[in-house]
Length: 444
Ligand code: PFF
Image (cartoon, rainbow, N blue to C red; front, side, top):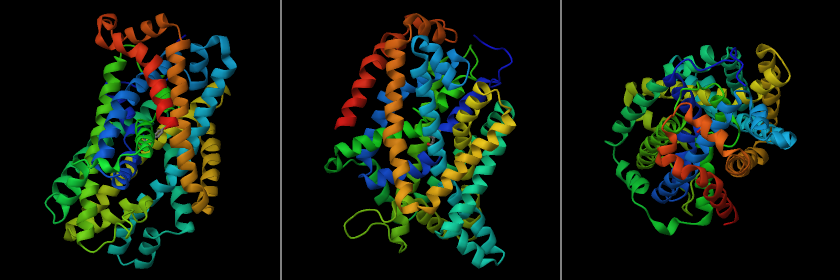
């Protein structure tokens, strides 16, 4: 089934960093800390960890395996594992493609804000205060223009294809991000007020537990591992046959979760440090003020306390954030682009522009109707589309795809598979446990 001319990641580490690049993004640094701060901190962290390892990891293996077996875009890969129902299989692929495009449309808006906070301090330093203020305050014009800038960056990387675009950038930039994160966390923990945030993040208070929290944690885990919308499936399709999928998926999940954890260690203490310095964080009822933009008020407040050095660290931090967002957004755009190039036989250079253009238009509609649409699109895609499609993929792998073929596919990179603990647990786990867990969470 392989067409040997199809693109591939050139190395195992290249794949890990690209897949981790997809996984690590705004979800870790903006989504996770915000959700943790609004949902009682440590309780959310624990439920989240449970969701990642009990639910998201097995599904990550499933999605990567479907992709690598199909060695094609998600529509074709899904058809290849369900040849009896090619129509329904294709519809699932199309649904994933639409969902991921909708995710990109709100993601690009938030990534645009990061861009504003990156360029703003530079302009301020050279005296362009009005422009800096515009970049750093909420307005339709700012949201629109920065979103378009970010979309163009995404389009340019995806235009260059897998090894030269996606892999090259992910490999260079991910390690720098990790190091900077650890350094900043070290700094914030020495500041006054930090311990209160640390306590909130690590010491559970079970009075915050609720079924809503479980649903949010599941959505967050799916979002963070880029599941249910074919991104990982398409990356899996560029994966070499000699790669051990269960092991690689575990490394990606671990890396992603570590970054979310460290982001929590940074942002929650930073919130309380900011509060200590006079920034308002919670309202009288104890709810987070402006949770969407929390990170954007707390972090600059932290950089301000750091003196002149803070300006540079702030700029560097937002550079890396833009990059983290970019390594995720490219994995989103790659889904519809792979479908268009293979299903419609289009040139990649043509496909990126019209598909990227359509997503930009949809994103502009959100920008102009921000209050009504922004939260709605986030909730539709992350709380509904991702878990539901993820469950469909689990059901496909568990019930429809021939067990023998699944075994053969994973075995290519893991010859001892049949004797492993993984193979004793995973097949029935995706078949029964994952779907049942998702249904339970859903109806909770
Ligand atoms: N995992 C990314 C993050 O945590 O920011 C977001 C994401 C990427 C979601 C790719 C979905 C996707 F297909």
